[in-house]
Length: 208
Image 1: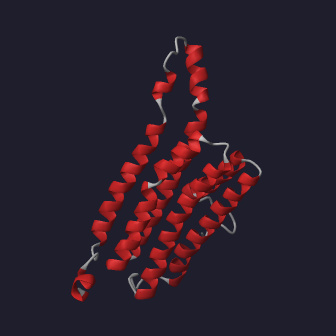
Image 2: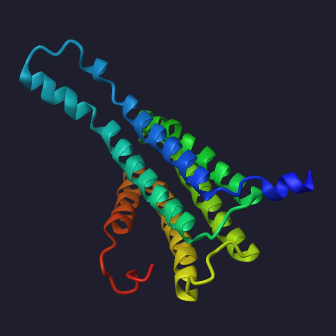
Image 3: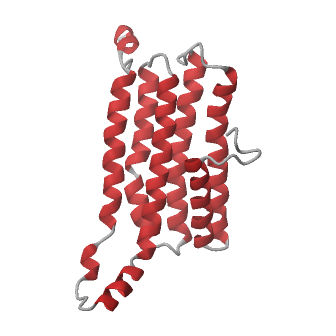
């Protein structure tokens, strides 16, 4: 058993391949909540525009979640590119990370259905938080047991960890804004996502 555990989960390529498949499916499933059937009975262009406008609250969580999954995919791939190898424990941490990824279509559909409900926003945030926690655990574990490439400079190691911590803190702040209004939370989270997508050279944030 000890020999098996030493051999299991060592392929970074297989982890990346599984992750690509899970992310591709999760990102595709998001769009299924945009029901074209809701437009049944539309008999004029004006009515179609009104119906499309009524679907807007569902488009917002869809776009937000697509960005979320994209950010986490980039974050995971960045980590995998910095690892020299994997082991059984790291593989299972990434499986836990992928578990949180598969939940994203559910939490997105819940938020789209109950976009003004704080409980739906909190469930969505918990989903994002679980993804961030497992990605953070992956990095900390890899650093601790020496799975990170030796030539990765310390400043880059710190930047990877700092980026996860800062992102999750900002997501938590965004979730807290639901005490005022869920739309405030969503708007803030989208702004946070756009910052990490486009990575503007903002003083204090450009090193994150």
